[in-house]
Image 1 (spheres, rainbow, N blue to C red):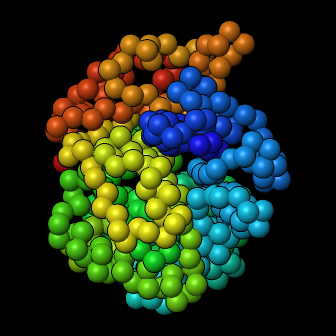
Image 2 (image 1 turned 30 degrees about the vertical axis):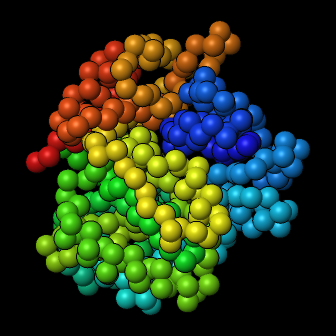
Length: 417
């Protein structure tokens, strides 16, 4: 079996690693992949640009399954185009991808189908939004409606911070066209949880829970990032929280998808806030989260490829996903300065000395096949163990063995306060 994975981050490396363990998999092409997928078993990096090139490559190489890592191509309609060409691809069509592609659309969907979420208003006019800020209580949250690489969310403690955030988004366009429309919503206090799940359009099966750490600095300080580390399972995601999630969020989401004729084989990511007043839905993603994937797939006992095939065949109702019964801790090592400006091109050493697994994200090979930094989030170190404390210890011990200039990582991933 030949597989094409589109993307170049730690998530895509983790997906490739997981799929490579299936003996039916002969070859995994990664476009364009990274230094990690270059060395990964059964993998080959290929440079392709644009949906047409992906389609032509899939035909030329007789690709049996294509998996899209990130959201931009899904929103652009890559699944629709592959299906028109009779090519198998895992993920939502353009209509389904709108659940992530537009926060305004997603919030309207939640409201229409009674899905528990924060109160909100959407705006595409700066002056109307600025006037609205005078009439509300604080803190509040301002979100770019479009795709902003996980960074288009600003929590504002007062009206001054809100005015600055609004100007940055709608006037200065710090997140580009993602801010053509914005969502202003109620601030929810509690604990965040990430629930990846798989769907075939008729069934949604949640994966094991995870807890992301979005802020750049220790103690949840600094700017929002794409994620600085993950633990799984999430200690705040109790049996009670799980039952509330299924009742108030998962079941009405599935009902809404059926009514709106949103049917696809792919991933639905539920970003949750667990509060004293129940479990609320913050957002949908329609692809595997990064870095949640790196932790969650390490805990999956079931074969990931077989799970994807069951979704493609609309047979998820018969599936029971098996987990290892362990804990995972994933810590991101980043370039100093991320998520703002940073330097790159620095040689990375020590990866082969670690006991856990290293998933490469923003790193490539130089002409001498050295692994050098090429992005903000450089790599992910993951360990699994019988307890969270042991998984943390193993991961941070491994991190001490890896070195590159200007390396930065949070030291509090998985600390339960």
